[in-house]
Image 1 (cartoon, rainbow, N blue to C red):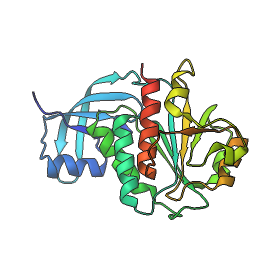
Image 2: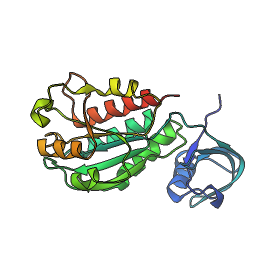
Image 3: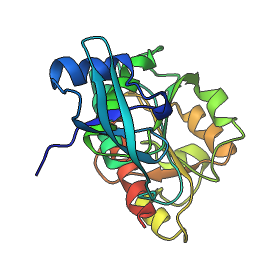
Image 4: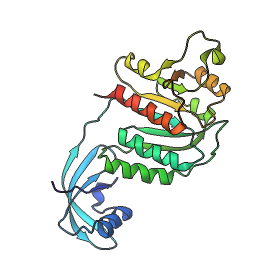
Length: 247
């Protein structure tokens, strides 16, 4: 089977690969004029193309065919997570959730956050690489860091929104019932729809943050009996939402 070479081109009509992609095509893969390539625009379309001009500085192509892709899952899968102190873990998370499939990641600054700022450019590059490797037609959106308070007050959040934390529910709101496993809620919610799960920092959300989230329509959930690291919890949440949204 002939090897396929995928490249991210958000503006396919330009008929020229972005500089970074061109360098990879020319200097790493050593592609030449006449070679076939595949483009993905991150908006649900794949393009078969042929290289028409190749040099160390640029790569031009002509489009042979455009193929719209059907979504692999229903609804929109949204993860909001407080970045870990070690950025390597967030980079690992961005790669793995892209491979699984999701739509949006929001970065949160919480009371117990050990990291207060993140440059999203590196995460964007990792997402693009994972998108190409896993042949995803849509590029996930990475939102810049924002405060917990401003995020939970947003009016564009989906109706199905959850917060995963380690507190006993009785300590949060005096309730007499335990948190429900996220998978069970998603399975009994009927037709898959947009869903959001918030994951706290390594020190968890503060109990006041959990209460604030609940006041803004978030439902407290469990991700299972194991105590998970931040990046593992976010991956589990994304996977559960993806399973529930499978067509």
